[in-house]
Image (cartoon, rainbow, N blue to C red; front, side):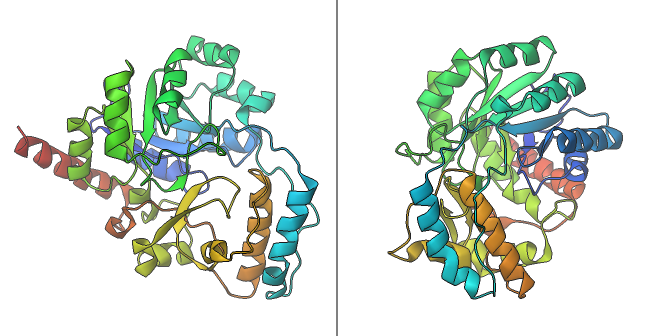
Length: 353
């Protein structure tokens, strides 16, 4: 992959839908890594605009990430209970919960327009999160010359990725920020660390492994590669870069005490995800908290509550994704961060030889 993509460094910037931007991805790619954009939170037209903007910024390869989640099962009782439980929190901001929880994001598996757009624009790399699309779509992408990878959180998911004929596996450890890439969010989570999962997948599969989760500096990149990974994927490390779309409240939280207290919770979207501890996350400690509706229905309520809170000047209800390495985040332009990461990795690698 590194040679095919012309990468100077074994560094992939995580897609981070809603946080990554074409500008961020372009700067990472220009600096010798593989930049990524996440288009799971937009439609085909929005994704096309992001890809077009990225192509205008660099001629270097990049990755486009899509979500492959099952369509949510509407459960009137669960959705009603969730809205009723959130009602007092909305009322605190002089608002009411949405009367209906809509499916904000469509899986690429159910979106023929997104599939057609990807086959037309042919990004160098496409990656999947939450599962795998149909074999026909995978075959079409490969025939278009697109390099494919997908997230795995345990061995069986990795084996499914290998059987599907993809080119690489992203080993997402429990330390990682944002949504867990679990194919089935209702299944028991093995909660494997990045190091443990990477080694298991290196030993048990025949595909290149990309380590992801808690990796914030060159020393950690070197450790991941020494553990058998082909490359490392970093997300939280790039959130503080000015090219990301993180707002001031997000950046301040990342630079403050909350960075030392990330939580894994389903309260934000209906799927397990790791975010900075804030007022929203603390709601899950309420013993009366009901089971959230399916992803992304829960997200519709969460976004509405965040909007209501922000209208009253409260930024404590945002989805501020971050991994356990958050205290090590460095606020600097992405190109500068890449240069430092490369230097650190080179030095750490030479020290182990």
